[in-house]
Image (cartoon, rainbow, N blue to C red; front, side, top):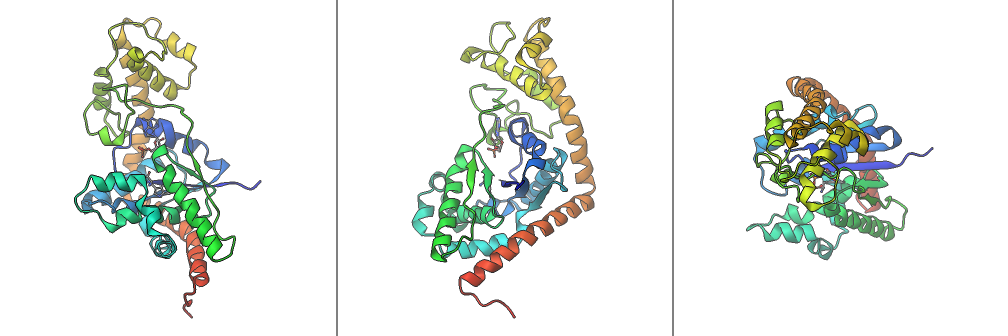
Length: 335
Ligand code: AMP
Ligand code: TRP
C-alpha cells in the first residue's frame, strides 16, 4: 500500500492547550502508522513578527518536547525544527522568483495582520511562500490545517501548478488541505461561547494549558462558567454550553459514550461535583505527558539528539528536491 504523506507545521507561540491536544495532537499521534508524517516546528514563520530571541528559543524546544511527550514517535514520524533544514529558506527564495506579488497581497491573513501593525515586515508578506515550500519539498499529499490556513494551502497548490507549468514537468505534488471535521471542539472555560484558544490562554481561567500544574487546572475548572440550573446532561442549548463543554472534555478524555458520561454524574449533588470530576480526569491524563515533557526539558541532550535525527531525515528528502529545482531553473550546480 502506498502511504499518503502528511505535513503539519506548528508555530512555537506557546500556550498549547487542551483544545489543541484533544482536537489535533492526540489524533496525529494515534494515526502515525497510517501515513508518512512530517511534524515541523516552524520557527522561521515565527520570525515574521517581532520576537524576543530567548523566548523564541525556549518556545521552539518546548513545543518539540510537548509533541514528543504527547506521543509523536520519532521512529514513526519525522519531527524537526524548520530552521535546522536549510532547504526551507533556500527553496523559499526559488519559489519567490516564480510567485506573483499579487498572489501574496490578496492573502486575508496578511491583510489582517498587516492592518494591525505599524511597520510590516517583508517576511510577513512572504510567509505563505515559505509555507508552500514546507509542504512542496516533501511531496506532501495532505496538509491538516484549521480553516484560517486553508487559503495558504490553496496558494501552495497554485505555486506547485505554476512551477510544473513553467518547467513543463510533473515536479511538485499538488497538496490537499485537510480541514478536521468538527470533532472534540473545546470551548473556553470562562466563556463557553468562544473556542478555547492560544491567544486567550494568558487570561487565567480561560484555557487548560498542557503544562499547567494540577492546582491551576483545578482553579480553572472550579471557576468554569455554567448556568443557574443543576441538570448534568449533553445539550445544544446555548444556555447549557458550559455544562456541555465540561461533559465534552470528560468524554474526550475518557472515551466513554454520552450515556456512560451522564451516568457517571447521575449522583452528583451539583455542578461542583461535575467540575471536580472533570478536573480529576484531565489532571490524570496530563500527568504522564507532563512527566515526559519535564524529562525531555531536563535532559536537553536527548531532546537535541532526537531533533538532530529528525532534521537529518527531513534534509535527506527536501535538499535533493531543492537541488533539482535549482537545476531546472538554470542555476549551475557546484562541481
Ligand atoms: P491553533 O491553536 O489555532 O494553532 O490550532 C492548532 C490545532 O489545534 C488545529 O488543528 C485546531 O483544529 C486544533 N484546535 C485549536 N483550538 C481547538 C479547540 N478549542 N478545540 C479543538 N481543537 C482545537
Ligand atoms: N501557517 C501555519 C499556522 O500558523 C503553520 C505552518 C507553517 C504550516 N508551515 C506549514 C502548516 C506547513 C501546515 C503546513 O498554523
